[in-house]
Figure 1 (cartoon, one colour):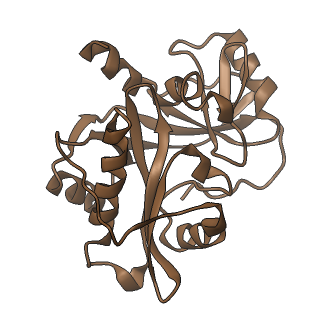
Figure 2: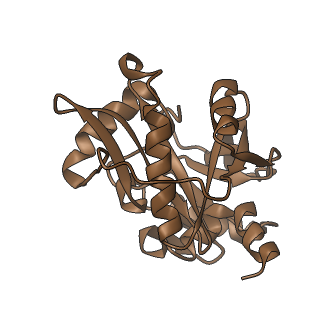
Length: 239
C-alpha cells in the first residue's frame, strides 16, 4: 500500500476499522457503522455525510450516545451534540516497541480488574468487551492489576495504542512506557504501525509520548458526542 493510502486510513480510523479488521465487532447500516455497545461507543460516517447517512446512523444508534472522531461535523436536526473536545493524533517512531518478559497478556478473566483500573485512572472509554479489539497487557503486583495498555482501533495498516492506565499509587515507575513498548511490539509483529490519540489539553501525556519519540500527525481532529434528539436517558461519562 502506498504511503498516501496508509495515511488516509488515519483520517478516518474508525471507518477503516469497522469496515475492515473490526467488521465482526460492528453494527452497520447503509453509510453508517458503529461498534457493538459493549465494545466501544465509536461510530463512523462518510467524510461528507448526507442526510441519508445520518438516517442510517439513526438505525444503528438506538438510544445510545455515540462518539465520532475526525473533523468537526455540523450535527443535523434530529440529533443533539452532547459535547466536543480536541484531540491530538500521534504516530510512533520507527523501531519503537520491544518485549518485556515480566508483562503478561490479559484475558477475558481479567476484564473486571481492567474495568476497575479504568474507573480509577480514567484513560478513556472501556467496556466489558473492549478487550476484543486486540491484545491487552498488564502488570500485576500481589495479584492486583496496577497498570495496563492495549490495542483499540485497528485499520488495515495501523493499530491504536489505547487504555494506557496506571494506578495513582504506582505512577512514576515507567510502567506505562514498558506497557506501550510491549503493545507496539505486538502491533509491528502483526505488520501494522502504532498510533494513538490523546486530549489536546493533556500536556503531561503529550510530553510523555514526545519523549518516547512519537510525533504529532494531526491536531485538527475532534471527538464529538452525539445522540438522537429527544432521548431522555443518563449519559455515561466519556472520561
